[in-house]
Image 1 (cartoon, rainbow, N blue to C red):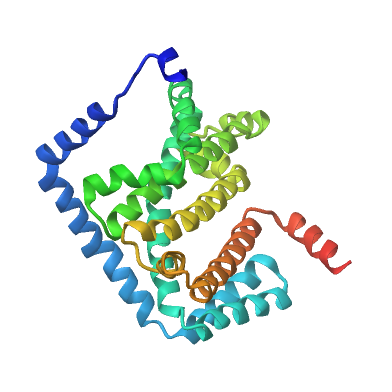
Image 2 (tube, one colour):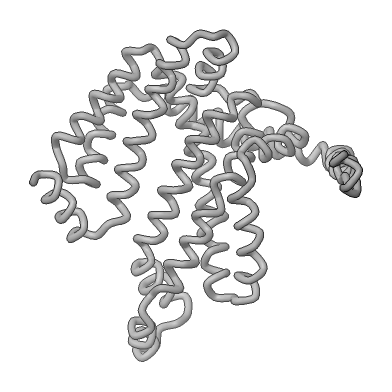
Length: 292
């Protein structure tokens, strides 16, 4: 038999014991972190978003999409698409999904951009972290939910933690790539004017690396949206909750409503974040091509 050919290897017990040890020794600290995230990030932001009248959010979305795309017709389409989500009775669940997404993206930005900058400046750190990022990007999203649940139980906090780990690698990699691709002549010109390393980073490297960094933010945002929907399995509320309900109860209509809402959000976020990663010439070329 095939099983007789392979040497049995298992490290499941060791991993379980390691997680149990962390929970036993640092359970109070983990609980405190969970309370802080709920008290100062997730709950206040959700209450703030829920308190904003929907028509104000629709106007802000229309203005933001027009500022990014410079296409009035598409901006109006996005506004009506979001209004359609409200007509489906999914406005509050959409806000809940956006709340977890926004917190996850903010944490990704705080962690990912500095790490990408350090990797661009420190070669040994880049060689050390690149294989780790490769492995992180190949793991299925469900794998990240297991340690999050074991460490933080179920709810919004483990959903945020799993989302951050899943969505972080593209931002780190593209931040490093963007800084490394800054033209050497631009760096030398900045050095010739007596620029410090901090000034070089702030005024030269980061602005020139903006398209690559924005591409990383775009990918991180889309991965965060995908993970937040799946994280309904571990207690994250929102649109994923309706999709999971439709799946478990064979309620295709309810799941389809939530699925359409997720698609609308994905298209809107993708187009806007992509546009902010382009310069004016690239935007003009795309607009001319669409009009043609």
